[in-house]
Length: 139
Image (spheres, rainbow, N blue to C red):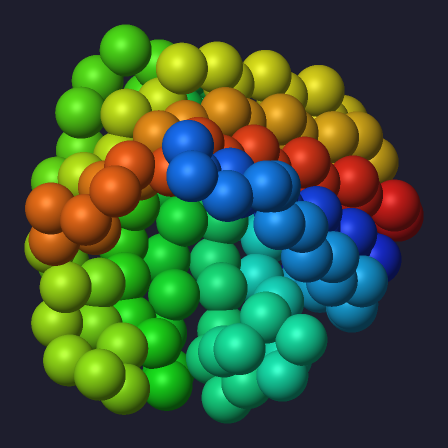
């Protein structure tokens, strides 16, 4: 296991509103396991998920994001595939559907690199949002 710095920039836009963006910079742990990389970090009050942890399992063709704690979810980002899951929040369980439109990763064994994901989200039949996630890793 190696300690690294992670910078996560997420943006969301809905057809009826302008783009919203959030940025988190924090410490993370980085591991190489078999055919993937695993990164774990704590969420903060900036993301509205203080008390939760996020685990990213990074493979060549997909990223699996698991959140546990005050918010629980498991999402698989695979280009061209719809992924349906539940998103447990303090307001209750919401049905969530993800459609990944782009996934690029460029990470080395030292935990340095970046990840870019573009995807659409539909929460419980509400208005669909367009989302981007950019992650920078520094060893």
